[in-house]
Image (tube, rainbow, N blue to C red):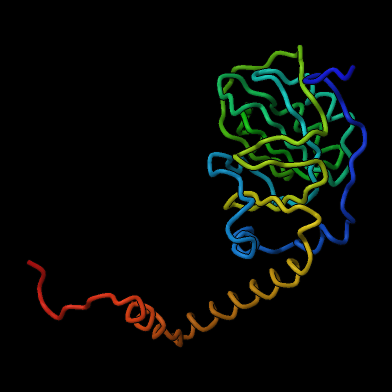
Length: 229
């Protein structure tokens, strides 16, 4: 019988690296807009430090305040993986700190996301590897288990499966299922270019705001040329 709650799956169906690289340089906000504002981790999962995040999910589910399975995940994960830890959002004990994150960086891990707390935050802020977490505390974890590796997890209010594509920047993280990529990469690059073109128009003082009044009129907004009482 399968030991539900304490098991490790060794295999992941990772998306092709070229697909993942296609999202490089695209703001998370642009991708989210094109996904109808879906797939974005809750704002309590904040960036601790590091460069922009891009990679595929290697998932870990831990008991609150316990990091045994994260230690095992650091052994198993491959370069380009983003280790995603569902620690139940518990903030009383840190799941990881400087030593484990230095290990992850040395292995070429593309980033770490913790729905829980971290410690050694000043050291983590200096790392190039991107790290996201729900909070910070100096209290350390236990190493007893149970937990699971490479199962669907819930992090920041979003279900993340092994192999899902993760894109992160200062705004947060968006989760993309490989089967949903389709023409998303092309549309995201087009949207990003369109916004850069708008910024150029703004700098030149040529932005057309006539659409605002048109929208208000279409929605029957009442505009009164008088002082309110």
